[in-house]
Image (tube, rainbow, N blue to C red):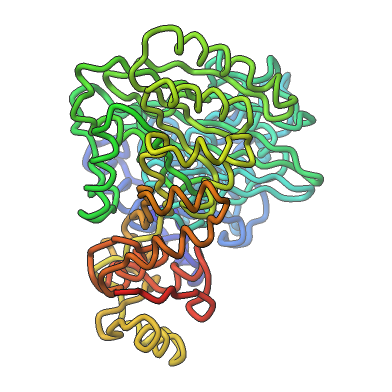
Length: 565
């Protein structure tokens, strides 16, 4: 990541440059540009352990107070030598340049200047003390701003801010993998969680009127602009027995005129796009996208509604908790459900809204998630009444959605009706390999894995690659450059519907998988599971077999179904 720390290689190597004499014209544009460039070239330090040993902190004696304590710090290295730490936002600014002068005027030699994380600067300065009445202390605004900015610049989809008894840490989910970003003092973590909720969120989106670390759960929405782009940050606080987690989903707020993403853009194959396209083009039926949290279900829903060829002549609504993406041409309604209330109470607002829509002459309706009996029941009413209904479910397979809906109270004969289910898609996201630094699988995988890929799945090991972490400039050393969908799509035929009605879901899945017409190295996804879709992308050198095993199951345990031709 661009935010990774730089290992210490001795004092002068860490400092980035040796001793220098005071410049006579430090405020000249040319000198400032060279200064900023040299400091940036040395990289940014994020961990206290990467700093050289120092005797004391000089910042307070040089009149650094308030929020500036999170922007810049000066430490005494001994022998009248000093190290200056400066944040991205203060680098080359007046605060930075004037403090340099003060250090030199005080009789210190600047042994070096380093770019540093605001959290590290605040920790060095002991800037966060929890006393909001202390005017000399810093709040956490700069630390939070840097956290959000770095997450967006690193293409993170989620920020995980985790606080435990004696430590705190932020993690980024980037291209489906989790990376450590920054460690924090526990008190700093507490203030960050509260600042995001109290100072940055939209008041009407808050689940609780006031922020408290003792609450079991809190949620809100934060709007933020970074480099001219607008983002919505979906905030979720979850209490743990020894601390808490805050999970922040980063959502780009698209403007009108943006070209809609197609199924192929998301990672679906042409055969799958045709299946989904035919289901979306119908004027009736139930279309569900299933999968775990963070599998791209909401994005796929948006792509479906925007790809409907009849969208301009149909009245369409969505009811979401909360609205994540703007879908143009859809009347979107945001509701709020409390996960800690009873089922009836938590779904009251959602059910009331859906009943209003049912009486309001709708054509198509999208419900963000179906997770309780009351919601499932009213969605069935929509479909039986001849409407088209889109939703998401948390299941581990496409056929798992049948069992899930049945457990939520839907009769199997309704589920097996010819006009009820149009399509069920199960999907996950897997990292895409960097073409510039990926390495042959033969150099990474053990022989048993290579043999399984060749003998069990009939793939050519010579076309298979793995990721490697290093110093590749194209992927920031991560070995991956994005995420892609692997999916399975079921559009029930007469035989599948009959088996569903009889409660024989496993036989229905076997029958569907027996319709596979090609090998796992072919792009035709007819009858292929999401696991087998991943095998195809492995055969094309696009994803790492190790990621398939991490997200699904080992190659050894995966059960194949014999194809009847």
